[in-house]
Length: 452
Image (cartoon, rainbow, N blue to C red; front, side, top):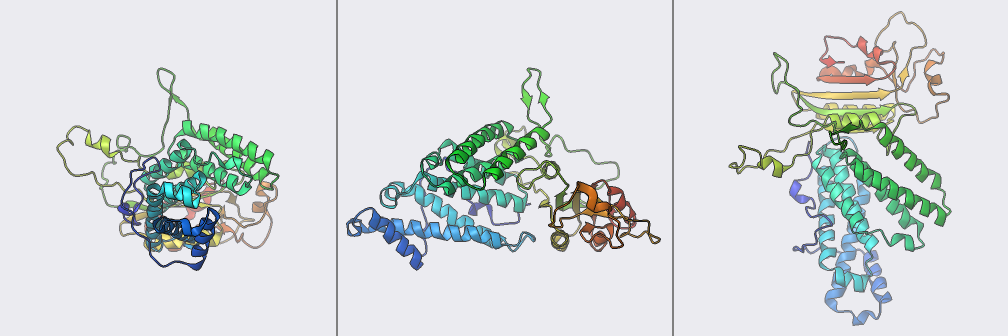
C-alpha cells in the first residue's frame, strides 16, 4: 500500500537512460569539509588556477550532492522501522537528492571525468544506492512496482559493468561493495521470480568470492561462503518445477493474479472487511533462509501481494482502447517482515500496527516459530498455561528444543503466549500459526473477532 512520498518524486529514469534533463541547482550552502575535499581533488589534477570557473563549480556542486546523498542515506538507519508516517518525508528528501545527483553526473560526465576523476565504480555505487532505496521503499509500502524499479537499476549496473574495474584495485572494501551489490540483486530477483537471472548471479557471485578470498586474507571469507550456501539452499527449497508441453520450465508465482482470484462464498459482502496490515514472523531453528528472509516468510509475503500491474497490457485489453483513464493503482496490504525478533520487538511492531490499523480492516499475523510447551499441567489452564511459540532470546540454544522442555516453575519469558495477543483482539485479527505448538492458540475465545 503506497503511503509514502508521491510517485513523481522518485527517480523515473534508470541507469540505462542517459537522456539529459534540467538539473536543479543545489543549495549554495557548503560544508567546510566539502570545500576542502574539492580543493584537494582539483589540485591533484593540476594547477587549480588553470581550471575554468564553470568546471570548478561543476565539481563543487557534484561533491555537495554526493556528500548530501550519503548523509541522507546513512540517516535511513535511524528511522523507526515500525509506523507508516514518520519516514515519508525523509524518504522523499533522499529520493530528491539522489535524482539530482544521478542526472547531474549524466549531464556533466566529461567534466567530472577530467577534473574530478570520476570512476565507473563510483557511478555504480550511486546506482546501487538508488536500487536500495527502491527496495526499501517496497518494504515500506508493499507496492511491487518498486521492485521492478530496483531491478532496473541493479540490472543496468551489471549490463554496463560499472564494477568491472574494482578487482584491479588493491582495495578489499571496494570488492565488498561489489559482493553486497550481488547479494541485494539476488534478493530482488528472488522476489520477482526471475530464477534464470538468479542462477547467473549466483555463478558470478561465486566467482567473485573465490577471487576475493584468493587475493585478500580477510576475516569475512567464511561469512561470504555461508552466503553462497544459504542462497543455494534457498533456490533448491523454493521452486516447484512446472513444465510446458515442449518441456520448457514455467515460472510460477505465489502472487495473486486477476484470473486467479477466488470467488466469494455465498453470503459474503464485498468491502465489509479488508486486509490492511500483516506481520510476517520467522523464528524457526535451522530453517532455510537468505538475507534474513526465511523460505516460509518469502512464500507468505508473496501470497499477500498482487502481481505487478503492466499498464501497457491493461490498455490493450478488449474494451479498454477507448478509455483515456489510467487504471487505478491496486494496493497491497502493508507488511512487516520480522526475522527472529525479540519479544519486545514483536510487541512494539504489533502495537504500532494495531494503532494505525484503519477502520473496517483486518490485521494478519503469521507466526512461524519453534513451539514452547508447558512444563506441567496447571489447574487454571488459562491463555498462559498452554505455552506458545518462541521469540528470539539473543542467546544460543543448546540441542535445538532442549530449552523448550526444561523443568522449571517459571514460564518462558521469551515465549509469545496466546494471552499476549488478547489486548489486540479489540480489532479484527487473523492469525496463522505454523509451529509444533500451534494448538495452544485454540484457547483464544471464539467470541472475539479473531480467526485462527
